[in-house]
Image (tube, rainbow, N blue to C red; front, side):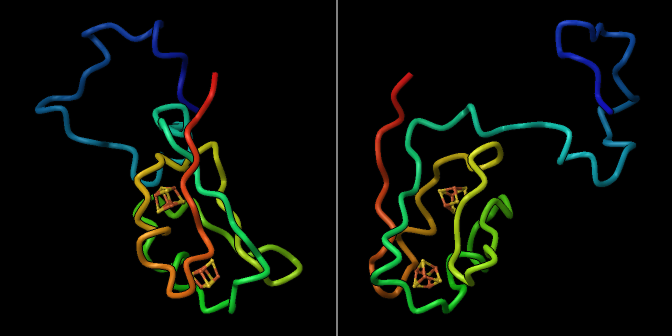
Length: 97
Ligand code: SF4
Ligand code: SF4
């Protein structure tokens, strides 16, 4: 488990800044980078999984009811899922904080 960012110093850097812990991306909740979030309209969804295939952050998952949703802890709001969805059922909504 990664420690909080403010506890890191330059002494924690690896030589050449190489990633020496493969598979550690799950420890970094990058979802708070986003300025937009995907909203799914399930009435238009044909469950084709195109959104799941195209998401570069593997943030989209299949729910028990077979529809898809985005894990907002990892979604960076790039909008690729909305762009690629063949039925236009994903829209991007402005994040409010
Ligand atoms: S790409 Fe669109 S239609 Fe296909 S599963 Fe995802 S949300 Fe549904
Ligand atoms: S907006 Fe980008 S990161 Fe978020 S679920 Fe869609 S494709 Fe993935």
